[in-house]
Length: 298
Image (tube, rainbow, N blue to C red; front, side):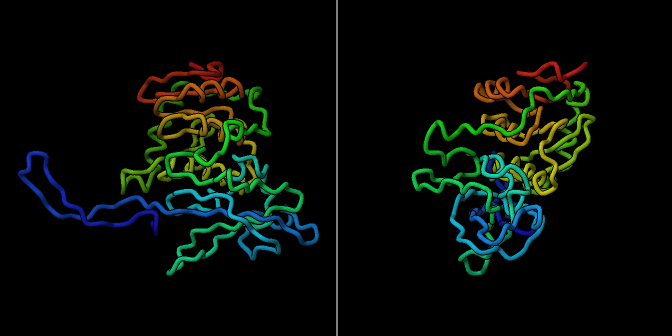
């Protein structure tokens, strides 16, 4: 698992105080990741010529720090690309010339920096110091400087997506997601996001201490694989359905979002505005459909 997990010695104590033993426990990794972004200034280099799938030397041009997020190491390029997509900075892999892990300033090197070079045609992102993009592992919009900055409109129309899923297929998705959570099995401390087909097949799964990071990692994978928009698919998250997760799903063109826990009012409002189906409390044989109930069939 690499740095995704770490072994620590703990004292195991029974509540009645009768037994205390030392043992090793596996913890989920959490480290900062800095995302740096610059624009290519060479002769007409485009993402179609140097895909985000490639790891290569970053071209000429100065890269500026854009964001720092606390995450579980692993799938860092997917995380960076998903973040850039859901923030509206890029729209596809064609907007990226190169994306690579860099060593950073730590000793020994921890490779906690992702360096992204955007195509020359992509407008540079805002780097105003008042819009600090620092995010914790529990907050996906902590770095926004204003309420207006929170809202990012999707490039994809999802309201007309004709996809449907049966309630029976939906009910089985949490177990399929849980069965695929390899790191959770060892730590018990990670969120997961899973991308499913209408038939219930798991296409991609990512885990992270941050639920928004797990979603960005799935969406970043879709960016690299040139699968956007994610029409005809459902995103399942292991926690609650918050506003920022709903917005990220919309930014990727997803018509359906489901959560094993509750949604928020803003999540339901945004899903209704976008024409998305929002499912909450997807546990056992029951679920609540908050918006887009026409896509859930008996």
